[in-house]
Length: 517
Image (cartoon, rainbow, N blue to C red; front, side, top):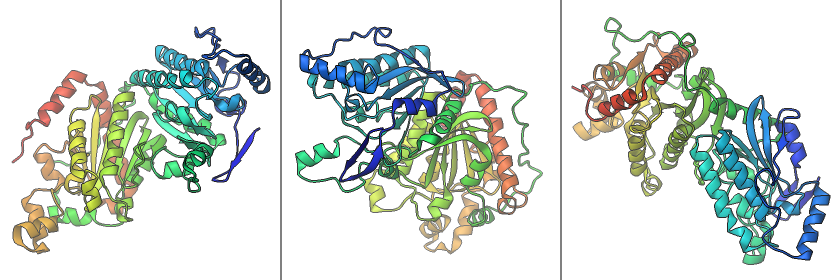
């Protein structure tokens, strides 16, 4: 096992392809694909006796034919395509043959309809081949794009180190991207950066842990935990888009005309109770095989919103959840959080999974940074995308529904609301100040604006109201189970429905078709 150290990075071992496969795939399931089988010639882009000798030595030392191994395998019985760098072969550098192997593997995976697990570990483009190999990285990126357009997931696990053109193509184009802990991952390797700039990167900047903290990748996973994390994603993305009628939950109890209607202001006050269950409680009850995706993948993240690939009571879905607890602890629901939400919308479409959104916020971030970060535009884009997504959508109004930050996740085929949930354009005290020049008439504003869930149901904005007995804060698990089952019922109904009818119904709903007094 080779070990590398640089002044700006810790001592980290290089995980071999053999060790990776032993930990990841089912025993004896990996079948390598040869260049000949994939229709790739053995000739590199550069001739020369010295380079040929380097290749021969690399093959002898590594035991590999090239710096990339590709083939098929199974993980918990699910067929996958594996693409893995071999750092022992010329530091995992990629020449023309290695690039063509990656391209061919992605194209075959697309043809077969199989997910891909990719694990780069590379110093980048092979300098012996130079530009001829370098420009092939564009073809690699195109192959990844073709593959993902087919609706199958790409799980990327960055191994130490991943830099240069490999990081700038298939290392950064995953549906889900994790990294080995403390692995070096970045565009320029630290030695090259130091030589070109005369400076060193600050310690830790290019480590996977820092990339996860800043929303570039989704997190770090150690090798012993990798199989379970990959399997969880595969279980969700391989979920059937049909629902067995016998397996669907029973239709839950809903608020009826005979049940008491809470006073709107009382509902607002109850949702401010710190003991009221948050999205975290609901998700803990509802989700299995859950993978939390961190950030936008473009250097932004916010704990105010959780993004998950998971099964909701056994139904594969993308879940976008506002986290009131994190907001109360200081995480603002700003433009970055809404860009995370939009990443979730796009993944739902790409993977052909239903989308579930959870609304529970006292309001979006109010700051100069939010304005300059395009908060209003992100709200607008959320609304335009949610109302036109081709996949089934369910939104859950769990508690507070204040302002544009709440509205950004509300439109859906089915809107489920807790009995004390509410929606208002502004905090009610703010609305009172605008109307009466005092915050003291917030209760009057709540009643005149008809903010309560039961009133929203009467107007057609909410489809199902879930009871609280008498308050979710007093029965958090029982309440969350009712909400969870209500969402499952809505999902099952939408998945069974005719897509054309479902989309036309949603279009009519958000084209002024609501019966609003």
